[in-house]
Length: 65
Image 1 (tube, rainbow, N blue to C red):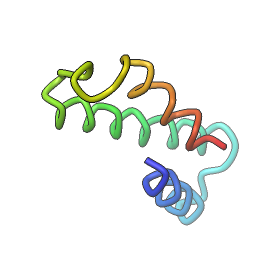
Image 2: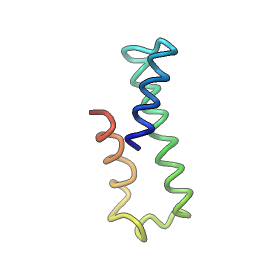
Image 3: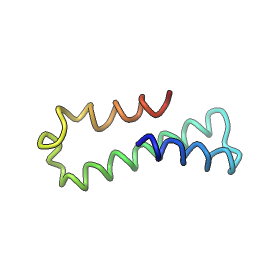
Image 4: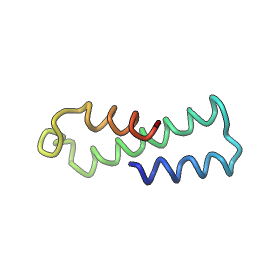
C-alpha cells in the first residue's frame, strides 16, 4: 500500500491532479487496492487480518500521511 500510495501520488502529480481532484484520485487508488487485497484473500479477511478495518481504513489513513 505504501508503494501504491507513492506511485499514485506521482501519477496524480504528472496528470496535474491537485486539491480535491488529487484526493479523489488517491481515494480511488486505495479503494482499488483494498478491493484487490480482499479478492486475493478470497474475501476471507479474518484469516489474514484482525478485522475489515485493517484492510479498509488502516491502509487508507497510513498512505494519506
